[in-house]
Length: 414
Image (tube, rainbow, N blue to C red):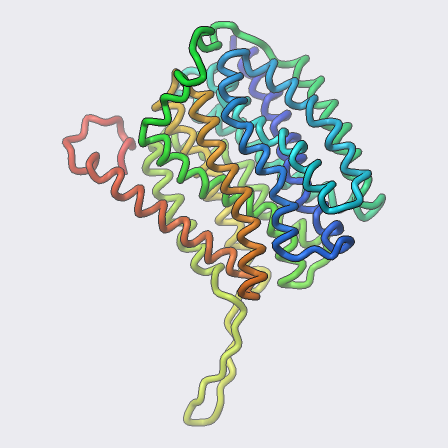
């Protein structure tokens, strides 16, 4: 059993890493396309986020199918279904071509709601948070794209990147099938209908977790898509250096999810998520401040002052945000694993949908805000507001638990 557990976890994490790298491909690929087609900031945001939309919408049915048919089968066919659309991007010439194909490429993003319940059911409750955190570290596929894609684009042109990714996806599907397993005892009862599984939506905890995840995962996806272009436009870096600096956010935001699972197991999901939101609140406040020049009239004459983050401080704050979001993504799914162990597929699909929709809507809003205000840091102002909502909601949601006599496990309340 331990050997099968390890094989399932490793093969699923590898597959999810490649799927996430493909899902985030427009973070790099979209920059030469934007230049070639003369796109606005809003159009670029829509292009980058289009795969995220599809990957979000399919999460609920994929989570339910995983409960019903098994994660191994659903994961394998999902990867195969995305190979052809990825390849065809190389031949796209018009903006609408990229949007349509991006929707089909987005299927790869639905792999999270397949792999999460698939992996979780192979592990006992006390190790489930760590296992789901290790699997979720496949988010580092976003950093993989930033390391690999700029070199491919620079050496062979942007048309080569989708072809390389299509071949990688096909090879990954085969490797996953060879090293993963099926356990029929993990399947949900065959007679349980879609409406029966969706009754979980009546539970207010699901909606609370959706909001948290829209911040820690939706915000992560949005920034992973947006930061390469931000470095190019704000600080004047070329594509390679901009992608490398953006990876300073994407890499810890993916890899350290396993660490988030471990500390969530140890200290409780509520305390960890609460701390994550406060860290993001402080960092987004600092990142929100635009580059500012002001002149102060002093007794000795005008004093010119510049306020703004240098690339070094900007990257350092993003690195901290990446760590916090990695931990937060794991702690939210620790909530789900503990509270909905019999219906993980459906609940993870719903919560994943909310997080994915956040990852779709936010880049579009980033672009619209830049077009409207002309201030690039307005993206962080928006994220600051979403974190404020989470903190207020968490405070009032857990207030009754703090007031009641506690018979909760250690770390279960704030």
